[in-house]
Image (tube, rainbow, N blue to C red):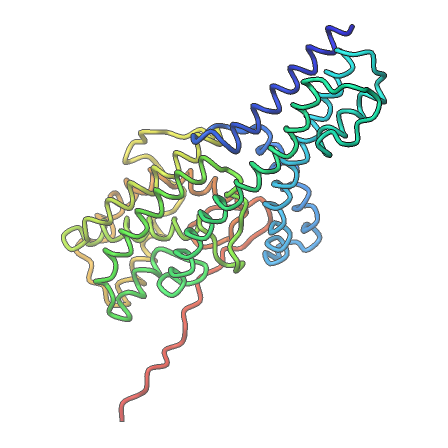
Length: 363
């Protein structure tokens, strides 16, 4: 039996260390079963807490604000408990200590650097390894936090800047309409360049550190998935209705956007079509597109294609990212914005609020 306990402890220790390394150290988008399961359990529990409020999105947002910190605490707790059980099995299997003493010895080594150990005159190599494991795991998680918050800060700065351009919550047609209303269409190429770089940053950061998906924006009506959908939709609409005057940056941001979503989807093991047909159906309807184009044209943008001719081109772009964007927005419990898909809680799409025109009237 001692051999079985030793092997069981060794296997559990290897599994725990592998989880720590793949989550905190390995610079590649690897699937973390621990993060996914913590996300699923905690997200479900927080949704139940917000369920009595029905379709009140603000209540759901307040509840889900706690998801990311709870996942971080859950990760650390799970790893420490896993190592505690592993070292208990190893000590019991490699010595004559009872289960109670083995548990106390493992805990004292793991959490107090072995200073509380008093049942043996000599410490083994296993005690020193256990004594180093606890502080090292905590140190790795502490070093992990600046990386998370650095990526979070870069993301949220651009999401906040987009609010004055695309409304809150962000919406692609509103982005184009506002640029026309305030005569800033020439700023769109730079906006697309900024979001092309941000999309690459999001794809790299959120696939390597999936817990970032659970970090919510400071304001309830802002969300990085919704903002990215808005920028991609604006670029796709501009290419569809204004093919001659649309900047080349629109194509680049579209490519960067759906590539980032696919990188995240691979890490989360979300199935998607890597090469969809351009005429494949999408969930957004032609009537919604037609109404949005009419609003954009009314704001002052001159269309170079008729809506019926532009629709296949817009659909050909959106088919590359719509399904993934909707799934990510659902998993993030993002604000139910226009053109962002359904949610797991009762929600009615919230249109962006356009500020009143405060320009002085001419005499």
